[in-house]
Length: 156
Image (tube, rainbow, N blue to C red; front, top):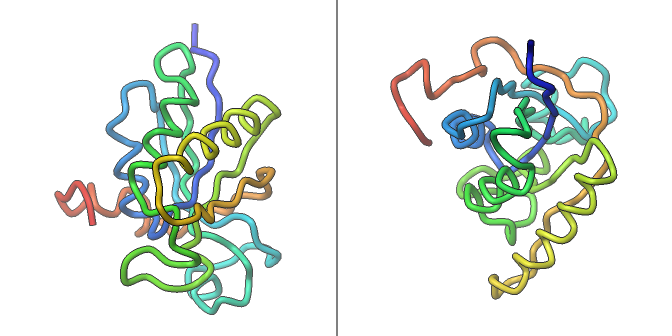
């Protein structure tokens, strides 16, 4: 019998490194990188990089909640980027690199808000992470999927 799975969606800068961080978590069954949170239908990487679509580079995570909790995934999210940087991560600048949690149900929303509140106590700067309802997720081009893994790397 196939396990009941859930979906979580996170944006934390360049999706290559974010995807890599989630792929090593036991209980994560699959990941997809793509674009979400914007207004353009079927955006391409070039469209998203123009800063005109409103999309974030994001990772959609399919997980087995019996093996890994959403709370544990939130911990991975907070630890793989700097949530105090507005519309950037490191050298990557633009609203497509923003920090965001896209929740898929009320339990995820409550967990994300509580987690953000807890994390704010650990940071000197203000956390700018958006917590938004999940919207249409568009898969990124094939060459972006598991980009680092295909190149024998574990992080950017």
